[in-house]
Image 1 (cartoon, rainbow, N blue to C red):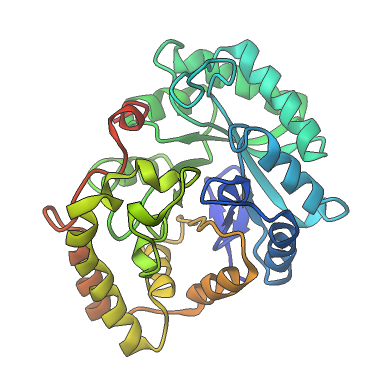
Image 2: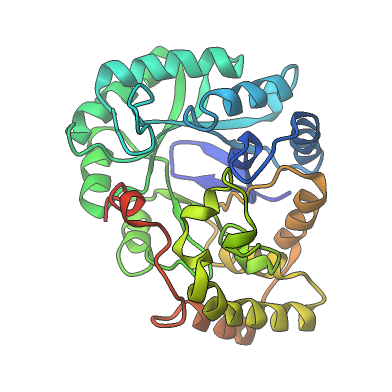
Length: 328
């Protein structure tokens, strides 16, 4: 698979990465053996960029990835994240980016991953209680120690991206970006290009909605993260179905699947963009990988661009508590 650069510090990864969050019971029951087989298949396909975090599980997702990459570490680029306070009762609503916690999480993540270095270490969410200069200063110290190679931010806003980058070069910004989530286009994408920071879109398939296979909220179980997603709820779900129909129309003309078209669209938004679609099954991994071979015409791009225009998508991407964690 073609390689792309994230930032200008030397980080090079496959054009498509693999989001591993769903392997940790986020979208239903987990199957470790199939998840490990999926990671191994990704390496066979030339997909070497793996995304995890301590909060996924928590902890178990990093452990699974470490187990899968045992004996294969040199083939892989591992990205993981810190920033949630996992000692809090509401661990997905509490943040902790104090320097002492940055060091603690990094050391514990290294142990769980079974490695002596992390390729890309992200702040998972900006912590308003801690100046980002202090947090990135601690992250930079990890680079000096050789425990981390490159630094990243996730869902950071423009001001904090600039402040962080002034302390130590940021190689990548991870944020949600897809056909139906375009909040980055007015300000964030121009900024990261100004600063030569790569973009790593998560949920490039709209948590599965854009593939046409996502269930209604009522059909999901309590463990499915999408139960918190307003776009999957009630009338919003019904109103958003026309988006899938439009993607499918392009896909049929192209002899591709809706997932492949949605990923191809993201890939063609720039060589500095590396989407990380998540899956825990080889079948979908292999389907997604084909997207890197698809070239959309200007006319097809124009049709797809219109899907995310204001008023086309019903519902916000997160519920209110989760949106408060996004630095925008």
